[in-house]
Image (cartoon, rainbow, N blue to C red; front, top):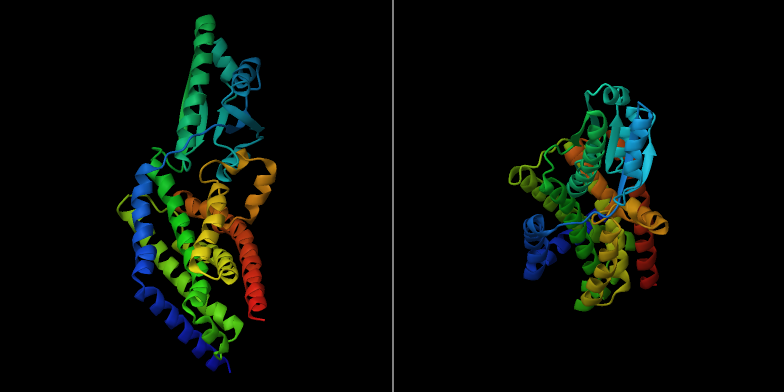
Length: 370
């Protein structure tokens, strides 16, 4: 029984691959389009930062250090400030992208100013978000410079801003945009292929033949799921290879964790595509459904603006967005070398989303069959 079921599923998978490959438009969409977008977007996309969140460690806790920090707090460029007790807390907030920069004031800050000696204020920027890091670091350095000019005039001390960019020391903008594009393009291709699969059968008049075949509804859905997953996985690996070799973006993480993250992320989006496909009668309707879901999902992924800067109800809504977690995983594994604990933390919501979307797609498909 199991062997016969696997034979039927394999036959459907083979049919799907042949159908996709024989259609010249499909070949152009799944191969040419993502590679072209990768090359164009890498040079064309720019972003603007409006709000900056910061984490602070003030070891000196003096009048002088509090005066400097008040300059940050009253700056229109900065929004939220988190006061950390230790370096671990500061690192965690930057790692989790809760803040864009960290400010560290050593315990000799006020004594050095009073003695007229030079003293450094450490500014740490999250280099994974190159645009935010560059702007935030520039604003922070300017505030320190302005404070230094005031103090230097009164006491003759020299306060310097020591700027460090974590995970992307030279703030290579392409490092950020390319690692994000890998995940976005993979998800777009998966969503498009799955959304067109069942709608294409209806439009071509072969859906009734599929229903009366020995295939069960589960086997049909499985057969429709595997080809887009395989194609998207292969394309993602090709795009990753291009990013690493042609654009010289370092891959700091584990290839195994990266592949697992890709698989789970694509699985979570397959259910969305199948749901769209099961309720659409034509491929045109399916494409419109993809666009309807795709644009808000990208906007709520943290790609254009940080999730923390969004209204609270939208922040909760992003927890249902698989693109948000896939971007975090791709960027984190690529540039930071994210470990298994952090990867698992982001894979759990993706698995929940995958279960919900696939269950919804299965329920909708069976209901339409009935």
